[in-house]
Image (tube, rainbow, N blue to C red; front, side):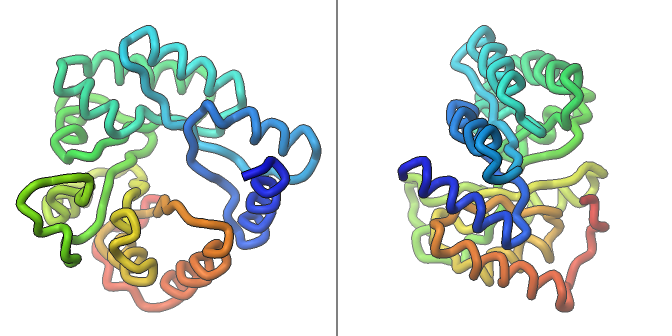
Length: 227
């Protein structure tokens, strides 16, 4: 990926109506160059994490300094912070994001992480939660070797249904195990407000058209749209 190829993909995404990407903040300089050269205006949501408290705060500061339009505590990191009893780190991150005037989110691979944050009284502006079904062959393997990212989709659907904040679902394709048309419909029908999906440049147009067709059609959805 040369800068020019990356910029071309950003432009293609914008032409398809995609105005925001999610990224590791370490990649922010290439987005800043895209802006500075006047090529386009695509925004980025920063996924913030750190191996320790200091690292998390440094990552947050870097994201804010480089123009993130929103930020959240990255899912795997939030899982670890909750498990280690550091929910206060997540609360502090929300404060830092809001002090900068941007939407503040919390991520999680485990629904227990989301539940723990709610029970601790944290109220983010949005949630980032993994979501996909298990109807693919590798999901049924006894050992988990990076083949499942939403461990209980039914419980996730039920719990997220009661939360009033927007829900961005990620890992919806289960790393390519589920086709986009099926994955996107499943996410939207079961309560997700936005999907975050990784893709190659040659998949952008097709995936944008798939989402447009799904949202223009009939959806069997119960949870109110939150975003």
